[in-house]
View 1 (cartoon, rainbow, N blue to C red):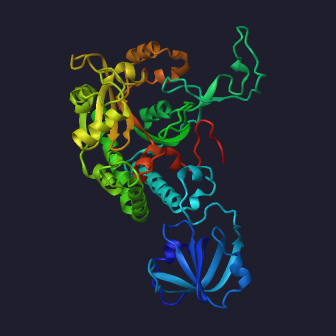
View 2: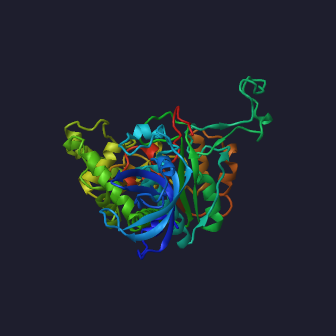
View 3: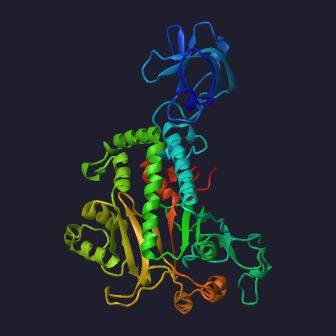
Amino acid sequence: MQVKEILLQKPDGQDIVAKGWVRTKRGQANIVFININDGSTISNIQAVVEDGVISEDILKKITTGACIAVTGKLVASAGAGQSVEIIASEIEVYGIADETFPMQPKKHSLEFLREKAHLRFRTNTFGAIFRIRHALAFAVHKYYNDNGFFYLHTPIITASDAEGAGEMFRVSTFEANKAPLAEDGSIDYTQDFFGRETSLTVSGQLEGELGALALSKIYTFGPTFRAENSNTTRHLAEFWMIEPEVAFYELEDNMNLAEDFVKYVIKYALENCADDLAFLEKRLLEEEKSKPQNDRSELSLLDKLKFVVENDFERITYTEAVEILIRSKPAQKKQFQYEVAWGIDLQSEHERYLVEKHFKKPVILTNYPKDIKAFYMKQDDDNGAAPGPTVRAMDVLFPGIGEIIGGSQREDNYEKLLKRVEEVGIDPENIWWYLETRKFGSAPHSGFGLGFERLVLFVTGMGNIRDVIPFPRAPKTAEF
């Protein structure tokens, strides 16, 4: 029986076995108290060892980090902090942990814990984070399954660059410095395993569109990779993406799906991870006390999550957002680090101003300039509503984080898509299969991408994305 289940039992002296890792051990008179946790809950189960019941040789082996099994009677606890405890009659030590065990019961910095990623799961903070991560992943699958979507596994090894950015990890079986060369001196990939240049995927979107144009509603949820040399608190080289694609959806439908989806998964976490969220909220409040007043969040963690679930998202065009930002006090007083003008890619500070200061609710921005968006986005009709050509793009902006979702209605016209592909310098031969779907039964369709770690970051209130994935991959970081 897991600790989570034991703590819910009505105590009547029944025999119980608790297995887990020792968090703390302390003695008082002739009694020893051992707190055990097996990762199923934020709470520990306390084992009480009365004098003479367990041999001294066994007790000496029970230290913080040791793995043990405690057999005994479950009784109501007389102490504060727990409702039940175990009066131990037998203890088996599965594995000892000597004095070098680094997760001793004291406060550790997050930087230190990243260096001990193989053990940080055993701390309260990371136990809570990864239980919440699981709940969110389950909620993602449940939402799409319950709404008639099919889960599509798109390839991890690909010959296409979905974003056209070129920041990809190459996949090759050639030995270093021994790759065969073509006549022009370039590497001859025709001799490689796949017979062409291949990379790790940056997105499953293009393949996802192929599925949607037959199955109508699909979603992908898998690992993606960016060879971007970004040492920031918001970027990873390996991360997980959720990407729904839906046939017959236009931009408005896409916005409705994005809003409903994120509200659902956050509400699921609120309803199913209450203890872990309460712990992380308390942790965040303590952390906020050390910050200058101006840098402190206006909302607690739970208030921030409810803020998203309980508010209708504001929907405005990129052009309207730029006008608001230009007229804003930070822009007038030159307090923005980055200047605002039509045609720029909005920065996080601009996005957060719109969400946190101006509208005070989540925001969906639409109809971005064509030149700052990807080739596959459907072009708007030129109706003179904006200073330049725009596309049917949408970004969902959240408090404290800025953009959390990016998506669009996809270009379904073959000639327009081909022209755009050529404009951005992509060889049409490399995505002939993608272009062909616009020749054979094309249909309006839309989709978006949500970086799963960004979602976990938001829900847990953590400040660094490397703390919400078990083993982070980033520049110069591939340990474990």
